[in-house]
Amino acid sequence: MSIISLLMLMLVVILNTLAQLSLKYAFQSSSSTQAASASPRSFLLSPYFWIWFICYVVVTILWLVILRTIPLSQAFPALGLTFALVPLASYHFLSERVVLSQWLGIVIIVAGVVLVVQK
Image (cartoon, rainbow, N blue to C red; front, top):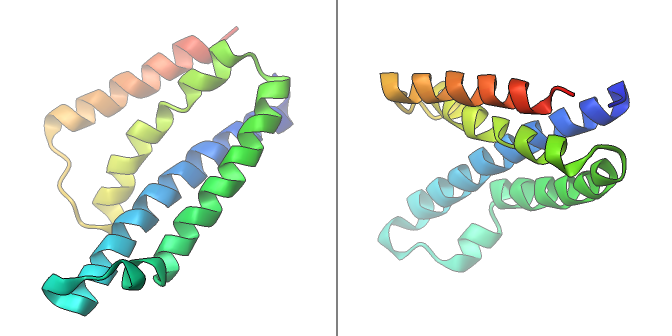
């Protein structure tokens, strides 16, 4: 696995995490501006929705490039790091709680990805 391929794979994980946070922000911002009658229009016009959308377009393109250079058996498990980064980012940016069992899960995910991605 080349350094460029590895960096692209990590970029996919980071952009996936950013996309998840952006989608959460888009829902929060559209519902807070319209109260109980949050319209799909306010959601679609949210800048956070567009960040989510652009991230997923870029992620899809990068994923296609990655699959040409990294075996699927190594690349796909690395996406599991998103399941570790989203709770950490939610804790930091959304002030969500991360309980002990989640911390344990994050450690297990990271360790599992390290084991699977090795040649």
